Each structure stands twice: as structure tokens, then as C-alpha cells.
Amino acid sequence: MNASPLPPDPSADEQAATWAARLDGGSLTDRQRRELQAWLEADPEHRARLSAYCQLSADLEQSLPSLAAEGRLPGDTHAAEALQPPSSRRRIAWAGIAAAAALSLVTWWVWPNADQVRNLATAAAQREAVTLSDGTRIELAAQTNLRIELTAGHRHVRLASGEAYFAVARDAARPFVVETPAGAVRVTGTAFAVGASPAGTLTVLVEEGSVQVHPGEAGHAPLRLAAGQRLRSDSRHHAVDTLSTEGVSAALAWREGQVVFAGTPLAEALDCFARHHGRGLAADADVADLTLGGRHRLDDLEGFLAALEAALPVQVNRGVNGVIRVQRRGSAPPPR
Image 1 (cartoon, rainbow, N blue to C red):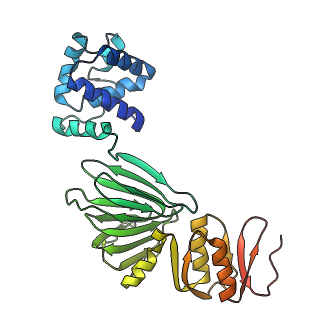
Image 2 (image 1 turned 30 degrees about the vertical axis):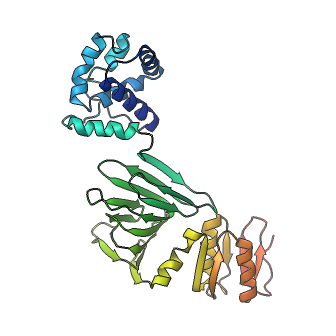
Image 3 (image 1 turned 180 degrees about the vertical axis):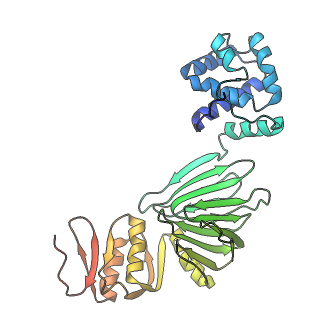
């Protein structure tokens, strides 16, 4: 009975792929044989992972017995056994994959500049940008968590929460997919932003080109959004609106560390700063619908709060628990 495949381990997989590539390339030096021996003995799973990578190439798999016999592998019986195609041990069922495809997968793990699998996360009041090896640029807003998987066959991002901007390099053979808890966005080359929350809300804004959105609900038809269109979705409904060029620029102002309000309810504006700074900001019900405008620096929370008190009939009170509450001016402050 075949055992289940090994769980992913990028570090061990990269090392196994490196050794597989070296073995495929010819004889090992004495030092390399000793290093391989030590690596195989360090963890039993190393043998299984190297076996799996060796099986990717039919030519390499056939050469394993002769490599061991010629002394091009460590003479240890356990090491030789590990490099034999296992019949009842852990095995990744990649039989039938062409040798060229196998070697390309190995190269994907070996080259240190390849993006491979990468996790990115930003903290409160932090932004980050990364350029992938295919030329795609990703910018993360504060409090964002995502995982990038880039292979020869696909380009995939899992956005768990937060907001990110994508300027995707065109590649018709490898669509770029952004998956969120509330649905997925599929493109071949365009510029757009995606916001998501674990609660199931989804926002997609297209700056250039077009995207196809697949809502998470079963049976819901895909939606195509063109440049300037924005989708806002939750478990109950989907709404699409069209923004002007200025509107798109304002919605993406976070990329420059700013936020633009135009007739924005106070509660919504506070929520924006709360997400960026990772702290509690709330408005009393009787002022939550007051509207405000202007361009503000996201990092300058105190400046924003001072602007609120100057522009609206409100006062800012700070609780002992760190929560900031905006109340109508003259109201009694919350109990401490």
C-alpha cells in the first residue's frame, strides 16, 4: 500500500532538488559525497524527498543503481536504498511526466532567484512591494497577508486578508489568479487591486485592462470587469459601479500612503484608519453618518483626528483600553 505524499517543506524540497540536479549532472566530488551522506542521515524524510525528485526524470531514475554501484553516491546501504525508486514508501505519483518537464521543476526549486512559493505579510501602518521573476509587481497595503505560488505552469496568489495592487505581466499561457475567501480573480495581464477579509467581503477595482471575477457562491456566473469598474461583494449581494479616472486614483491613494475622502461617512473613514493602524476606532451612532472629504496621510492618525475636530461637530475621546471614540461635541466622555 502506498503511503501518502510528503507534506510540503520548501527548505527540504529545495535541498533535495539541488542534490537531484547534481546527481543528474555527473560524478560527485569527495566533499559532495560526504555532504550528501550527512544530509541523508540527518532526517529520514530527506531520503524520501530525494527519491521523489529523482523519479521526476526517467533518465535519472534509471541511472540511480549504476550511480550507486560506481561510487558516485555514498556507499551506505540506507543511502543507496533511499535513492532506489520506492515501491511501498512515500512516493509522489508523477510517473508519465516528461523528463524535460521534470527537470524544469527541479530548476524552479534550485534557482535562488525564482519566486517559487513565498509568503508575504505586512504589519500595522506598513506597506510593502515586490516584483516577481515574471515582471509582475505586487504592492501590499497594511495588515495584508498573501501567499505567492509561481511555477512554469501557473501564477497563483492566495490573499487571506487585506488589500493588494497587482500590475500583472502579460502571459496568455499562464493566467494570473488571485484567490480570496470570497472568490477569485483571473487575468492574463492587467492592473487591478483586490481587497478581502476573512469574513467574506471582496472588493475588486480595475485600473487597466479587464479581469474575470469568480464569486465564491456556487452557481454564480463569473463577472467581467473593465477598466474603471469596481466590484464590492459580500455573502448577500454583489454591486458594481464605475469610477472616473480621478475616482480610481483616489481609491488607490493608499499606494502613496494616503487616503482620499469625498462625502465619506465618518464611520467608514474611521474604519479605514483602524485597518491601517490595527487599533480600535469608533463613532457614536449619532455622528457615524456625518460626511467628510479631503486627502489625508494614512500614517498621521493624530493629524486626521485633529482635522475631524476642526471640520465636524465632534470630539475625540480615548479610552483606557486604547480604543478611540468619536462623539458629538459636548458629549460626556466614555467611562474609564
